[in-house]
Image (cartoon, rainbow, N blue to C red):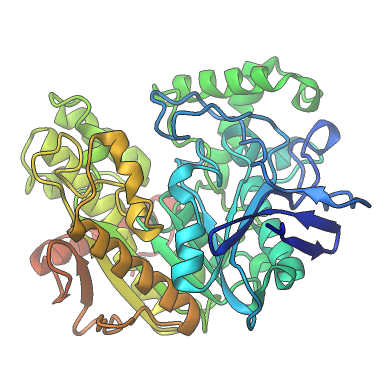
Length: 500
């Protein structure tokens, strides 16, 4: 079988073909961010003369070890600072230029890679007739420790990596059969939060034409907190700025874990995330989007019905409702959640539901409303459950990814056998996602999906029955909106601004 060769501005790449899909793995989109390039903005990769093999995934970004073997399908990838690689799946055969879908993985800005088996792009590329790209970016302290006040370093490096990957797509995807004028970014959790930031970043303007945000909206640190975290990290590293580029990677990771534990009591807390920064992300994403910075970019956004159940069900006794409430206040940067929390059971399921509603669902609605005056928006909710399963009996955070990529066969890792109903749901969701990439609307064959508007709030429910629901859980939404107004007034008073 002839192996596919693609031309790029840096050299030729030889991939592999499986069935009706060509795939190129481990493509460098930036120079290794090591040595003097550590904590610096990504730089272009070095070109090569001979045909470069592109059949193996590149190394994954350094990250905390996984507590199970599921993340990378039972394998152990190479972890390295030299991690800026992407992967491309394309339908085989000559045809017109196809729309491109660029996946930005989640993982609390700490974990994950574009090479995870659940993000395998072959079925999406073939069934949807699209080009699929998955990317790596720097994680944890390497990508989201903001050191611009400590020397010649940049902030928001993980986001700058994503922008470098999108620029690579603009410059090179035509060589793989893609249309650089039709690029849709899609991502989940931290990947979705990254997209919220990309929509607001001046350097990302013009690099994509559509966005799909799954289970995550705007999430940023204020500059003062970012500086405090960086200072605490530097103290843990030894206090010498010169160590930032000289210290071994494991010392960086260990100092980051100690910093997170001392500041929040959790070595895996979300201290490492995007920062409001004049040079890279000057305005909070939701505010920037409300101002029209993403005008003309259609948006599809949604959440899962039981997002929070993933985070609390490991300990059914819970950490204590009041303790979890304080943690949620810290995560959201708000106070006085007691009145809102009074509407939820004081047990682990109540904690999970409050996190779902406030952290995921409410923030996604707010983000959608800010984009509505500037571009069409579609809202969805993923409700699919597997009754009786110890984990997937709820529509937990991340569960929809298997259906979007139609990698549901991997659910065997959870002891799940795929049935015809699951297969049909995966096909329907994947068809909607790829239709959005083709036409800027998720309406596909047999799927009528009205655009979102504040008077109807049409929401497509992906559950045991796929249907459109008008303003789901209206009373709960209005209660969350009322609480959001209180939070906004409190934040304005704290900052010295006059609340509206």
